[in-house]
Each structure stands twice: as structure tokens, then as C-alpha cells.
Length: 290
Length: 180
Image (cartoon, each protein chain N blue to C red):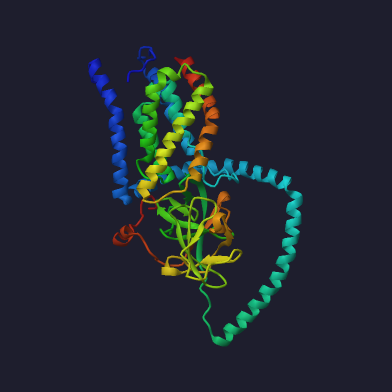
């Protein structure tokens, strides 16, 4: 170690703090100027952390299951009544659905309409729920030989969750639909009115920019729209609700607070990609899978 | 700033050195563990993504009672880790944490002699200032007005968990003091 005189050492010690504060501002500018760099750094860190979070997921899952068990016991009675009522209703809907399916098949047969392509999907595990007041994202653990691509949509068992924003070697970041940076083209299922679902970091994202004079009504079902080819159409999103001040919000079908597994749908749509993705073709990932 | 706590002379042997290093990095490592722990999906129904910011409490506590163990470089590193982990604008957390660090350094001579309640109140004030500045900076960087509510929840949670974290830090601090 180099021996420095005491005053010099003190002077250096006093300089460290201002220099680091300046470095923070520098980082801010760098992050703003070169988004790809920040993204790569985040993906690299995520790759490092995914095994750690993955190892933790088992004990955490046990704790979570225990908590769910306690909750179930507390609400057993009311839950039972609710399910009975819902079951009754669903039974009627099942009859309707079967009749409609038969009719649909018959009509397709008459028209010689091509069958809808079956969507391909992979199921991946959510290992970390990251973010703070202003970012809502989840970390996904994906295998080394994955085919996950940026822009893919993710659904849990009941509805849309968000889309992939970063892909690393064995991890991917999922931007939730409630994140303030999330903008998703949607439509009202019944009227086909187009709108944009904008995240606000509150539990319910807002509806914006719908077609003039066709405001969605509270209670209507919202599904994804294939506007601009960014999203496959018709995936369930949520129900329109009227929030405070008459703002139209969407209550998501997906349970964003208890994400364990998500389905990543690959419809082969490229959609609107950020410019850096367009100019830079995807690098082949060959490291570690020999 | 020179550490006001008189340090014993540095030990000579390899194992002693290792022991010393382990004790020196303990606060930083604990903070990193806490920051990472915030990402564990526990599935709390009221979570909605709003989590306390343990890094604020850690930097505040260690700068106040053991500034030698929470040097600016460690604060900066914790900040960068937080940014990368949570997807915040790069450089935001390092700046906020360093400002908190600097603010505590100027007040620590007065603060260390105060009761826990007052230390907590001062933490609440400083956290309000720091998170408020964070809100302004985010809005500037995104070029968009951001909702205030999530920031208020975050602040309330951060201030609310301070006693628990402080209790944990005091345990660790006593352990470190006993070893010296």
C-alpha cells in the first residue's frame, strides 16, 4: 500500500463524496443517452441474480402457500357461497358456449373458413417481483436454450400480465401492464372500440385515446387489439370500471400480486420495436449450451 | 471525513485480516441482502409493487453510527445495484443515497446523542426530502408528470419499517463492537 501523508489522505477522503455525486449525474446522462447500455447492464445483473432468486423460490413458495391456506380458512364460508353461486352461473354459460361452438363449427364448415392457428406458448417461472413506486416489473427464469424474444406478451391463467422488455442469457424482464411505461393497444370486446391501456403504477391501468363518441362503458370486457401488429388480438385483459373523477380504468383479470408462472405467447408478430432492436439483429446466444 | 471512532491497530495475520475485512463489509453486505430481499415475491395482497426502500434506512443508520463502515463508495455501489434491479433511471439511487449520506454526516455530531424517537423523526424528514427529490428527478428524466400517491405509500412504508431495520442494525452493530 502506498503511504500517503495524513493531510493528503484527508483531502482525498473529502473529495470522494463530491466526485461520486458528480458520477451519479454522469450515470444519469449516460443512462439517458445510451439506453442499450443500461438495458444490457440490467440483463447481466438479472442473469446473475436469477439462480439466487430461483433457489429462494422454494422456501418462499412454502411460506406463500401457508399464508394462502390461512386466508382460505378465514374466508371459507363466504368463499363457498360465492363459488356455489358462480358454479350455477357457469353451468348455464357452459351450455351456451357448447351450443355456440357447435353452431360456429357448422357455419365454418359451410363457409370453408380456415381454422384459427393454435398459439404457441412456453410457460416460465416468475422468480422476483421487482420495482418500487415507479416501476412494475417481474424477473423470469428461462432456460439456457430459450426462444424468448423482446416484445412477447405474457399471460397468467386468467389474463394479460404484460410484455417482455429485456432478455438475457437465462433471465427475462417482464414489464407489467400496470407500469407507468406500459402502453397496450386494447379494444372493447363487444363494440370493437379501440383504446390504449396506460399503466399508472396504481393497481388499475387507465383507458385512454378511444375513438371519439364511443366511450367504453363500465362493466364491458376489454381484450387486446392487434393495432399496429404489436399484440395478438383477442387476449383477455379485464373489465372497465369507473374510477375516481370519472376516469375509466380497467380491472385486470390477471392477479399481478401473486404471479408464479406466466405463459409467453409467441404469435410471430414483430410489432413496433425500439430502433436499436431494428438496426441490430439478434445476437445468437451460444454461450454455455455447447 | 476522518472516522471519529478510534480504531484498534490493524491486525497482522491472514485470518485476522480476513476477519477484519468481513467485519468491515458487514453493513454493506447486509444492505445489499435487504435490497435483494425486496424482490422476493411474497404475494402480499396490498403490495401492488410498492415496497419500502431499505437502502435509505441502512445508509442513514450506518452513516450515523459507523460512518467508517458505510463509505461513499459503498453507498454509490448500493445505489447502482438498486437502479439496475428496480429498473429505475440509472444514477438516480446513487445520487439520492449519497445526498442522504452527506446530509447525515453534517448532522451526526448532534444526532448520535439523541433519543431513538428523535432519530426516527429526523429519518422521516430526510426520507421525505430524498424521496421527494427522487420524484422530481424521475419526472424530469421521463419528461412526464408522475402520480404522487405511490411515492407517498413508499415513503410511509419506508418510515414505518425503520424501527424494525434499526433494531436489526443495532444487533449487528453490537456484534461488531463486541468483536473489536
